[in-house]
Image (cartoon, rainbow, N blue to C red):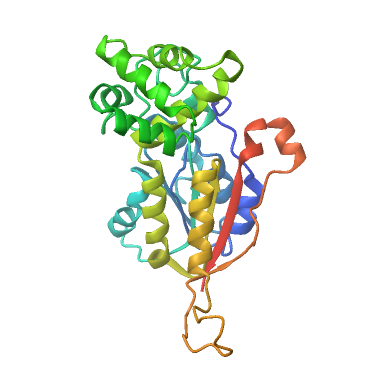
Length: 310
């Protein structure tokens, strides 16, 4: 018997009900994690339905393989960043899918893991990579980047107002060889932050660096742009975002792809013949209900948006 899953999936019923429009269709989950949404999707699939799961985190992938082994006939799992999902589909000789799903951001397990470097609550090497087998770690970035590079990451991705003072302390700590662990970074931030705001400031700084290290916003943009060509007409794309930066990207992309006319307002009759690629399934983001928020506080910030290929 498997242990309790280390991560609680968000809005499972909403995801399944909005995404699965054909029980015998093909569904690609670009951010499978520990298989919570995957399990629910596959339980709704018919005898010829297919689930394709991707994840950049090898630990999550191994866990999901064991959890989803009962659905082996329905699924195929891959260790890859979701921005590269077209390559996976090409390898499977699948031109289009019935549904695409992306649950963006970091899982509660990754945050709580003491050895991954995501949290300022535990002392650990400054890593922050979802996939530790490739890419630049947070330690490498902070110890080699200049003031402007670090500052822009903290300002733009962490949305931290005090980014200049924080960046100076980080650069100063680097010069002393004191930027190797999460507690080194924590100490630098706390040294120039009022104690009333320490927790929120630390969260923003760690978030900003993590987003940069994993190219999270670029991955989202690339995956969204690719989605149009790989969704069947009538197929749906669903995205859960936990941060305003991510949700804004999704909202703007869906809105742009759903435009039906680009004519100037002064022209009374449409002459542009614009053909939308998507239509919005829900004009506003779907959010967790009060019961889910009470049982899983992390769901409070989640926004789920869905669009359909036309």
